[in-house]
Length: 70
Image (tube, rainbow, N blue to C red; front, top):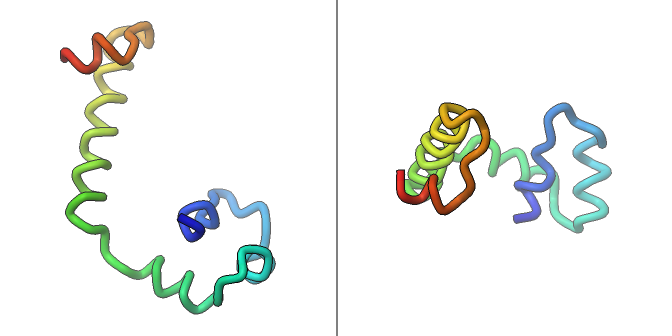
């Protein structure tokens, strides 16, 4: 969770500063960046893309109930 919050685009703070504040080694953050996505993360990403496409096709007016049905 800490590493996800550190992955900001564009970077607002230096990685070393964020690591110091969050009390994590910077090398672990860089190792985490290189690690491939898990199956669960891949599924979550795919679902988010599908939901966003459906929401945009609806004219950005559908709520979560209609998107869930779609």
